[in-house]
Length: 326
Image 1 (cartoon, rainbow, N blue to C red):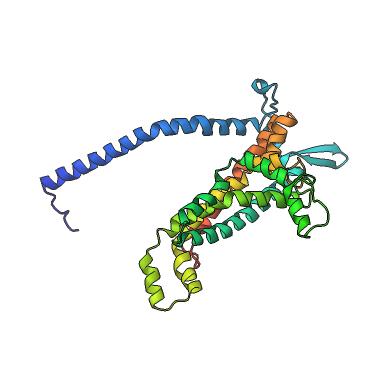
Image 2: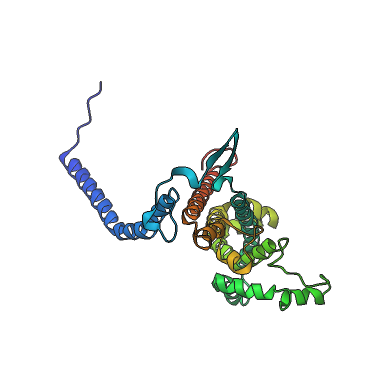
């Protein structure tokens, strides 16, 4: 067995100073983070805990302080009617809840996909140098800068079947013969909501992707052009892999926002099964029907569904084509 190497006193003192400095930095970091963690616990963790707790009670708006623990009854309960007959009740047996889940997931997939595609195109255009580029960048950001409630109300009037400018324009060019109730018809309401959301949020995607494009070294483009690489191959082999981190961050942020969509659906459309999302369903039970515990259960499931989808997406984006972590 080899003997341990001798450590000089100077080296030992330097190591002790380094260790003490590291501990002081960690302590200072926690001190700086403490106010943020306290505020986060007060505005996020405690309300989340209370929501989860209420989902296991029989709470109502009038009797929040007298809520009784009832277990999983709000989520799933089997009621036996005797003679072998019975029925499942609760959130997980509610077809309206599962329709809301489907509406939310469908909205998120379609809207985020379109916003990513259009945002990438806009970012590639804005990345080029041309006269007035600064003004074009400012104009592109206008839809994103408008509050969502204002955008929803504005588009609700524009899509109105009697007074809306959209129907008037489509009739003038001959695409439709009669006005369409875009936000009231079950066949077109979700299409209208997705269209307005894409119009509003595509600049956000373009902004994040443009930030990634500006980090790509220009020397790589110049070398590729000297080698005669076609533009499409240059984009596929050079640009896209280098902006992929920024693109994935943009997709994750936008998907989180899309999965909890509420305001644009609530303002633009009537409360129907065609457009009801998980957030709208939870709000409807919390306040409109005074089923506070049931709405809390819906809010809790919404939180865990978003958390699972986000974790799964982040894990998937950490894997390369061979299945190994990057």
